[in-house]
Image 1 (cartoon, rainbow, N blue to C red):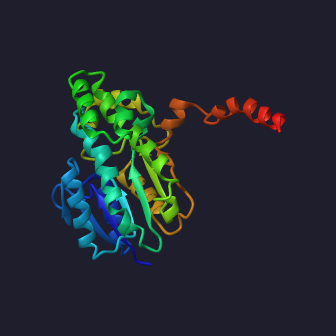
Image 2 (cartoon, rainbow, N blue to C red; image 1 turned 30 degrees about the vertical axis):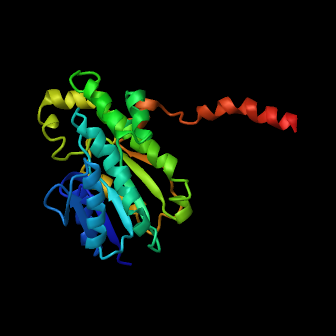
Image 3 (spheres, rainbow, N blue to C red; image 1 turned 135 degrees about the vertical axis):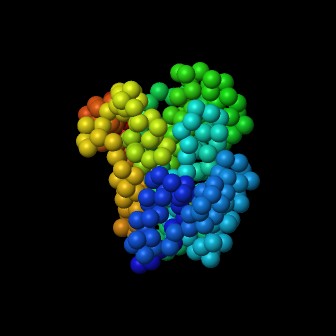
Amino acid sequence: MARTYVITGAGSGIGKATADLLREQGQTVIGVDLRGAEVEGDLGTPEGRAKAAADAVAAANGTVDAVIACAGISHPIPATVSVNYFGVTEFLEAIRPTLAESEAPRVAVVSSMSSLQPQSNELTEALLAGDEAKAVDIAKRFENDPVTGNFIYASSKRAISRWVRRESVTPEWAGAGIPINAVGPGVVVTPMTEGLLATEEGKAMVDAVVPMPLNYHQPAESIANLLIWLTSVENSHCAGQTIYCDGGADVVLRGDDAWSWADERVGEFFAKLGGQ
């Protein structure tokens, strides 16, 4: 069944790889990017997001079956929080009413395994509160410090994964039959990373932070294929997840036990049983 996809960041990297694969499958793709796409728009501003969403709906003739949000930047600058978080959330909220009219609406977002790394609680909470001005001000304090500068990107990705998790079960998303999920890549070989990976020193630094024992650095297509499945008709029940497609980096960094948080609740559970 032919479907209509809106893909942000379609001009390069993961977004372009995803758009290319979908077009090869005979799907209709409306790309959104700063330049070189069906819709040219700036997701770094509220006005740009609203216009890009409206223009994408118009380019799709009013029918959108899926949105794949790939647009993002990794620089340690305030614009990163605007593009990576609000450029996703506000764009999706603007297009959601049209998406809900599809027979099988789907959404997937590109997060990052950086969402698991050190970040700023203050910045992440400002993002989740929807306070762009405060988030930008915090990022301005961080940008010139080689340590805290890294918090900007990590916080933007932590926040977007949390937003996906929070919103996925709400009446507006789950209640409208719209699965929304995220993918957390490891080190993807794209124009965004080629400069960093061009030297042995750069590779060593990246590998120390993002260890990838399975097949090492990944092509954009490894993420694109997962995004396509998450936004396919076949995905009927996967909701709110950030799936770490990262060559095993998540497991190396967090270990084999992702469940023990629930053990702390065992006592509460039996206490309630005893009180009944």
